[in-house]
Image (cartoon, rainbow, N blue to C red; front, side, top):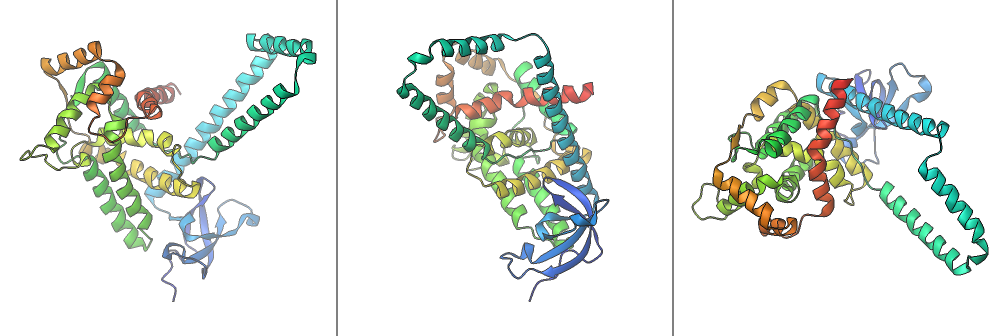
Length: 378
């Protein structure tokens, strides 16, 4: 016997169509006998508000969302992000068109020169070089196909969270201040657990499945613990991190055996959210899983970006460090190469930080600051 349906006939809902949420109405529903999980135990025949009836379609349950304030905010954020993306692409196209209308560029001249050179040397081309070029082209096409097939997610950070990221970057890299750790009642694990409990109660009340929610929150806790020391720290924070590791491994210390997620707080969790799109692109995650993860993270960031949660979870002060810490940092920069510094501060880790992850870390705050300035300018 099929479980009770999460949505009812004639109910106003929000429905995913590709990557956006649209207002819709449930016209009919039926049990889905082929469904393997309870989350998709029903199919729903929906009509998109303002669309022609030719677009009416049967959709699985996981494409529907309750029409409430949180989901409507998510729909607006997704639409705004898509609009910004299209405007950026349109701007790039205009720039390319203007370039074509203008004077020939150096690259154009070089290309013409290369073509002329090829014509002059055509008789000297051998079959071997042609085969080599074809092999190189095939490799390039295969690499391009592999790259474009990687999963990609776009995480929406509310402006309030972007501002925190910018302030965080300036405090650490410019002012040489560190956020106080251990965080008191505002740790990353605490934030994730609070969100999970609130969202779980909401979904239970609505009768929707929370399986993906539980998996996503658990995965973010695990990933935060593993990623913080390798990806999420600025160099000035590594001394503090090493001290924390020593305390975790020190018998009798109040931090003995604690998770990193119980010690570091919301500022570092935001860095993880900003880094996830780049990091997930390096994994073998399938596109469907990446899409579901994106949805859960966007819901989380939308919740965290509300003012009452900002006031609650981003309360730890940034503190000046004593002269010993500052001298230690300067000494390391002066007498050690970057690779030697990394080895010293990451010897507790099983793997070295990858070059891609370093680039993500270095670009993290700069990207957030650029986006914020662009929004302010508009």
